[in-house]
Length: 280
Figure (cartoon, rainbow, N blue to C red):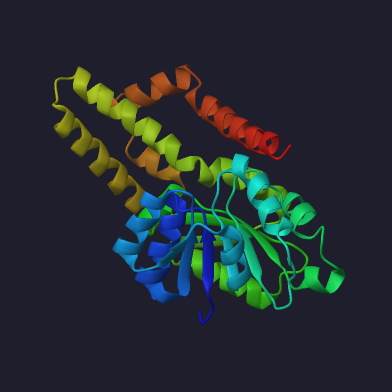
């Protein structure tokens, strides 16, 4: 990648990005610096990955060619004000800013980071909004990505390479990013919720927690693999395993009677609305 990468925020996603870049060979540990207020967290990252760390957000921003904002949405305003408010804030050479904060729109980042800058400096500071998800921690992430008007093809290539180190990436218009957040950003939790219910059913039927968890995890993994390899719609695969009057039909009949499918759709739409709310 041949550029210094700074990550502001050393939580789970900040660590996942750094680890994926190193493990995939997209960047060397010596090219990555993470900033955070938690000294013990920074020590862990230095020891584990050999990266550099700092408590100085503005220093990291100034020295990095790619800056990833991996802070929580409620912390974003404070961090942006800190970066744009320090003495000597200027963008003399091109710098790519990537935000992974849910619900924070590009224009909100522009309002603060572009405020003190003239037009040529703004053009030197492209911004890309990315919504990754937690399977990125095991390099199976799904990320949606949207650029602002100053992002060029090489900026998008660089952003894509960073997040492809953790999984798959799809580009979207920004007006679709709240839906991306609802589908893939929150999506793993829907599967975890199903797994919780399956494990609970196993316990009710007399399995141990270990047996119930193993049956659940193995079944979910196999079902996902089947969808990936057969490339059939899930409806088709479901019908193949559902014999009339059989055990699967008894189970799906309960789900249909209780309108579970529509409740799931409504839940995902509610997640999209919450993402929109976060931006205001």
